[in-house]
Amino acid sequence: MFNGFNAFVQNPMSFLSKRFNLPQGLRTPDEMINYLLQSGQLSQDQINKVYEQYKNMQGNGGIPPFFK
Image 1 (cartoon, rainbow, N blue to C red):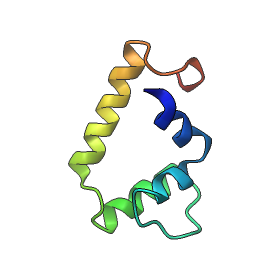
Image 2: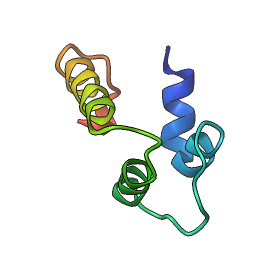
Image 3: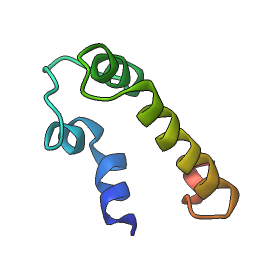
Image 4: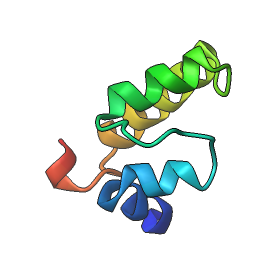
């Protein structure tokens, strides 16, 4: 379960670039999320669902301690 998550944590740009069209130069997660929203590659609802899932995983111990 954590293989994809660990790959994302180690290199978010590389992980996301395999799934989305992201330009070079984006440095932070906020920049990446904003670009994906503005370019229409993700909707606000999709972002909200990912964040909700993250909070659920965090609440039941599914996120490694260094992310809490």
